[in-house]
Image (cartoon, rainbow, N blue to C red; front, side, top):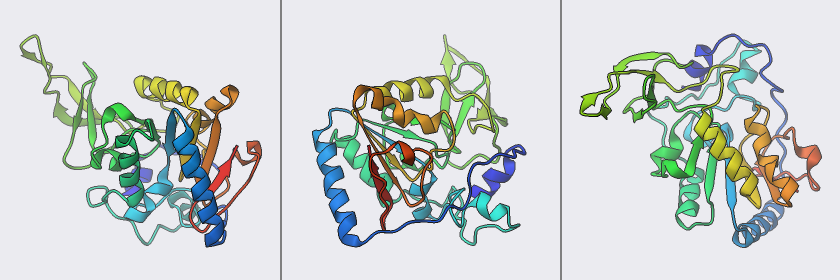
Length: 262
């Protein structure tokens, strides 16, 4: 659950701007923006999608900085009323749509800050996904760095030992390294390979689309801007305002998540 994950992290004072109001627009305006975004996707040569906690709220997993987010309510001494466990959560329509767009080669790479494992549960190939902050269903060997998918979410966060051993065979022998969870604690280094691939694809993209993220955590939140220096487009889809809205030519909000274009 998001609450258990949040409670497992180290104490950290600066959790970003919390509880910003959500903004809404008329349905017909949303339709116009969806058509525009569809046109941009079809015209683009390399589309990258950046996802945050907002795309998983429909599965029952609370976000963190929304009006009813884990950290927003924490400041009031409260917890979210709805908090589905990671084991019980299933991919949302957004997750399934993204997997379909990857299969159709309309989206070429997905960069996620989420640790819920829902992207992989859709069947999305790991080769098309960077998980910058870890995955509750992945254990990683401390010796050979091999990763293993678990059937249940880890009970630890912060790259702690799971009490399990690596099963990889190295030159006919079992590696026998120890598995750790892959969930990053505050200010931990991001996984090198995932970060390198994220930087590469974000720079290569002529269209970066951000879904359900306030883009407050760096370096993740700055990756979508990589394409700007090469003339690429940036789209932000979120009910709350984001830190990069001031950099956009048009600030928009919708009944569905807003589409802001640059």
